Image 1 (spheres, rainbow, N blue to C red):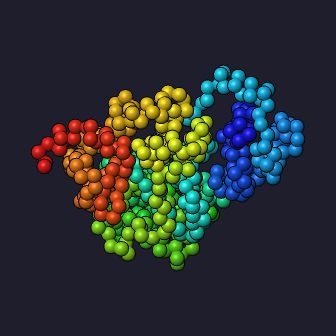
Image 2: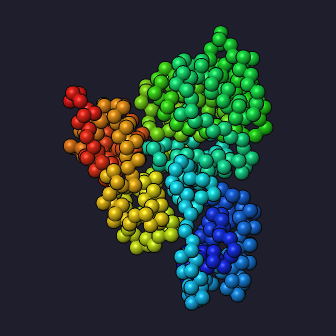
Image 3: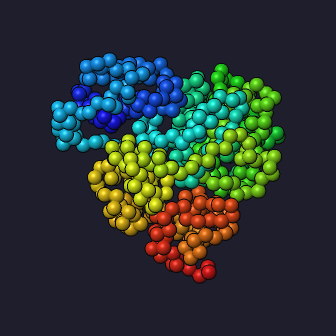
Amino acid sequence: MNIDQVLQVLSVSQKKPLTPLQELVLRLSWEGKTYNHMAAEIHYGAQSIREVASQLWQVLSKIFEEPISKANFRHTLEVRALTKVQQQQIEKHATITVPTLEFPSGPVMLSSRFYIPRPPIEEFAYREITEPGCVIRIKGSSQMGKSSLMLRIINYAASVGYRSVNLDFQQADSTVFGNLDKFLRWFCANISSKLELESRLDEYWDEDIGSKVSCTNYFQRYLLKHLTCPLVLALKEVNRVFEYPAIAQEFLPLLRSWHEQAKQTENWQKLRLLVVYSTEIYIPLKLNQSPFNIGLPLKLPAFTIKQVQDLAQRHGLDWKDGKEAKQLMSMVGGHPYLVRLALYHISQEKVTLKQLLQQAATESGIYNDHLRRLLAALQEEPDLAAAVKKLIAAQDIKLESMLAYKLESLGLVKLEYDRAKFSCELYRLYCESANLHKMVGNRE
């Protein structure tokens, strides 16, 4: 038997389906992972995992009528074949059970079996977040898994007793970015609210010393002073701040100054910054002012073929020989969202891989909504459309920095040194078929 067959036997033998945690514990046990390793990977306490596993070993021992433990789990069951009764039960169960899969949308839930770790990124992040005054920078284009990783870092921090605040700059009204004072007051008020502390801005704000010093005092003398444990401040979509150079040129150096104060002041050591953004910063900052050349940088890579195969297996697909995974990756690369969306539809038997690839860049394909959002972004900025049109003709070009960063943020291109190319075949095919000429107008 393989692990999928073991899970099927267990599912049909019980009166209720396996929970995502139970399935993960069994899969990782099959791979030989320790309970402590599982705790770090799936973000549950090791003791809780041991308790879940203990119950599973008891159930399996009863089903197979011999002692099953973590130590002999794979060794004992891998040499067994399914009995005729078990095969019949599985077939019967399959005919009456429609697998329920979560639709790929937003961050991957903590309890989901569809989160694919990208070693050693998670391990580095969990280690770094325990360092006083640390800064972790998570960079990746749209839908590459930044928020999913952020959730797991926050969850790990919570497991070691830290508080956390998740602040998404996309939620800020455009009026907030009107001037630095208004922005920093919004920033402090939101963090106070999320920590369930009374906002006391007027007590600490002094126009004579300026907004940045007032904000710093508010953090040091009020927010951090009232905390007895470290605080993880997760700043999401920081690239929104990049769009307002007057704000960014003041706010970003402020974050760096807080990191540097942690080397001298105990209160600031409580603050752990988690900065999430889509592109490199494209406004001028001195090297000693930028928060983007300090701390631990984590750039999210595309999935490897083994990771695509792993995710396919978790969707109940037998892609072990790698043929199907290579075919899918020839179209979408290892883009996590595009891969997972394909596996969702294939596993639900809504489309075959062959049909999916044939229709991928068309309006009838599963990626239509995703591609139309990219097209809308190009329509809003004709300069971007013009750059993409040049890329279609040349396949590999040098772009002006601002255009390159924006296209990389969208995920349309990947940058190699000073050259830009389409990040996957899907985007090249779609952009070739889209009517970019009308968007570009007379700019050429």
